Length: 621
Image 1 (cartoon, rainbow, N blue to C red):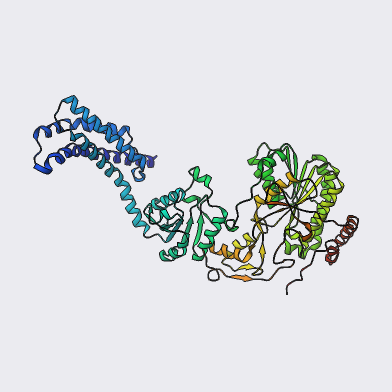
Image 2: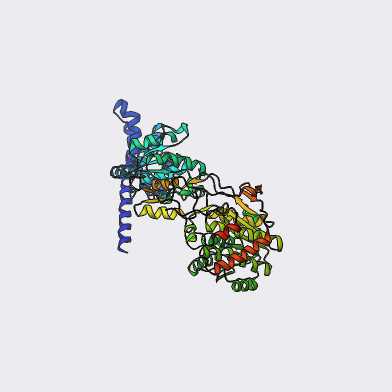
């Protein structure tokens, strides 16, 4: 209450000062036109005109104060004045000049015809100078403070978004940044200024001017930039060893949400060099609407995103099955909050439990099953191959069997590019799962499909969180091999593909995403170090640890004999099913089941018989 009283008292004092200044301004504006008209030449103002001006001055003061009040010239925060306030000043002063003319006409006082025009000009100029002096003085004060700011900044982009960010940084009392220069590829803008900051050139000048000004941080203020453009800019900026930040999407600019607080560190996703995969959301929505959908592994990275997107497409019921209660609880609470009217069922169960999976499907009768439950961590599965087979292969078999017994219409299994020419247990187990799916599709009414994609950014076990943690701890960042490459996609992209696969599915397909160019993991590590504001091998070192058990230098998306056909989405392809002896396959599968249940010491030779393309990597010494 005391603070509010002090603020109101301060505001009243400021308004009183402004009123007194305005009274003085009216006095000056009333005499100045006569001075300009006569005194400059003859140094003598005729008394008749001088008396007329003084006789109207009281009326002018009262009228001016009223007009200024109506036009809110006593209410604005002049430290932040802009074009709106300037327009109000011009309008108010013009109206005062008109009323001044009326006063002279009503009182029938003689005055030169030029008086009214000069009166309006003088009043406008003085009022503008007084009001905007708040902003000018504040700007000077802020520039003095900015000289002490330690963070020297380069801004890339000279559009509306850049102007908004620059304006906020320049005017903020709390900013620790000093903007040194602006970069823009539009040659028409070179040499011009935004908020007093010079546009020095195009992207080819980034490295030169970053060094010239000793820039510490670069802000990429182009919200509408494509991923390809962003990748190019980031690659150039990396040569400067400056920390990089960028603005979010263009929709936030349209909504007026762009400001310094919206700046974010450049994400590794910005370096993929392609725009996000687009899918036909309407077809997906129609596909799952009013359907009972079951997601196994619904608490995992892929499974939980599946649940999020399905929940937003109005299913009749969503059933989440997961063995890990904490993950299941997290996604349950999230969906209950975001979709309070969703018919949501969350069950703790293992796909390895035949009776449990049968009872779940018998009770809920799902129309669609998305099978995301699996052990996916390659090195861990190399150490525990029997568990990988039990969970991935026989968990899939039991879930598929429960699906056909209970009339599931579509069964979509999440696979991996590691299933192609596998060198590890995880990839081989997923290849066997694909064979199970293809076999079941040929013999049952349920439509079985698999969706194969590469590494997912931000997923549990992804290399990105590991690198970030290592950088946070001061390094070193560990990379297995300097030449190792991987395909990457985002979790929403992967899930969108899985959902659209269900729409395209006719049964037996292996859907594959065109994920663009593969990314070297070493480059990824270097990029993350630079984007975090550190220098590679100076601040943060990179160490090579050797390929891990089961790991290979690159992943294929398709086996050579599978071939490739297109779908309506040019980035989604279908691999032709491979022909194999189904009878022999199930005999081998039952033998494999017996061996892993007996905790066989080395199950790899048997897996090699089932998957001829499986070539186990020997452990590095």
